[in-house]
Image (cartoon, rainbow, N blue to C red; front, side, top):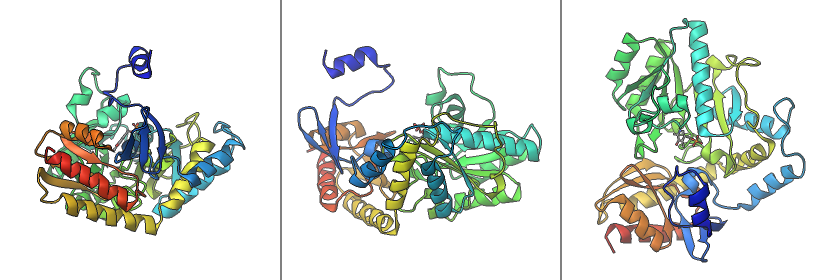
Length: 388
Ligand SMILES: *Cc1c(COP(=O)(O)O)cnc(C)c1O
């Protein structure tokens, strides 16, 4: 059996995979099992922030591999404490809980919100408002948080305690806050899986006001938008927000699994010994890599992300076959005249790997992709959009 047959026989069929086995990566390039080269415009869904096999990240991970690979959270380890310090210093948040994925980071935020509201306002204040078309993960709680019915089907009954409001509809949120007992409001500043749709600044600031006035927590899911992706360290920084909880994962580990739930001042003492935990969370190897990744996402890198974003916007705006461009930084969605799936397939033939989000072509290249590769990728995408 070849790899594709073996995978199909033995791996659960949860993914519609591209017909492609990736065997090697270097920076923003990937190679398949036949030696064909591709420009990586997906970063493994916004995970490989510095592309594949970045030398500095490898050195940080390798150094820790030779020290100790795992201790459990019964002991102190330096990489976890250092990563927490860096995350707090660069965001103004106060404490960090580490898990291993985006869904776990969101689970933590949901638990913190419930505990905070129960202690402060009463046990019936457990409802969290999330937005229609959002995506927060696949576990039962984060599935319920996700405001898209397609993901709910087959897994009912949903966990109670979530109410949905249309994105950018402040009145709808206000009504829910009046009619229900609300613990928190949870948003993605750019809805990624929902089609790369940024929220409006007005809506975000309105949510912030409501949250302050009514002692409701503001949770920002930065699993995809975080770690430099939007041109700021975290997406909420584009909107001048001051969230109580920030969750992140994907790009933070640069390819190794790690998730983090950042706790602001109002909630920094909510979690107490025994109230939450994770065996692998904040694993020293993943954390050592993440410390390096964060150190590389500096002002210089962030301004490069903005420049590359502006370049892509300029190339795609009003281009033949492209109806609109949405998103921020290096998280862009293209609404195309031809079906997105066709463009994804054609780009792959042309040696460029792009993704889909809903009916859009989604671009999530490594933050440090060199300009010449970005230009080549844009050429191929424009060619595919024209149907050539
Ligand atoms: C990917 C994603 C998640 C889920 O992350 P996992 O690591 O797959 O659990 C949650 N929220 C957002 C916004 C995401 O993009």
